[in-house]
Image (cartoon, rainbow, N blue to C red):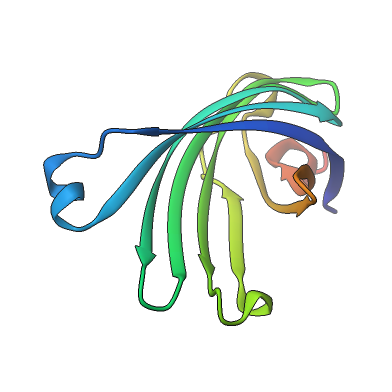
Length: 140
């Protein structure tokens, strides 16, 4: 049975210099610095690569971030993997997938698996995280 954790987060996204290969591919690189509140409390640090299509206004991004903190009272860390696309011509067609990298959980979050939904309404970010811990799945 999956658990659900909900809350908010503040994020600071800052541009950083892309590699020479990134420049050749017209990719932008950003750092992520988040603070989570709610059922997940803690911080994360990460990096994002973005491809913008100037002609259509479409964009895609991938990101990895390591979250360190407490999830429903359990301390540890884990890595989230992001994959998203957005189309300026059809905002409803946006897709965003955020999931825990299997095997990345540490401490009391060892064996963590799950997916996170992120909502951005008027600049306020919130999350809904559905997750399971291996120990819970095994009935411990």
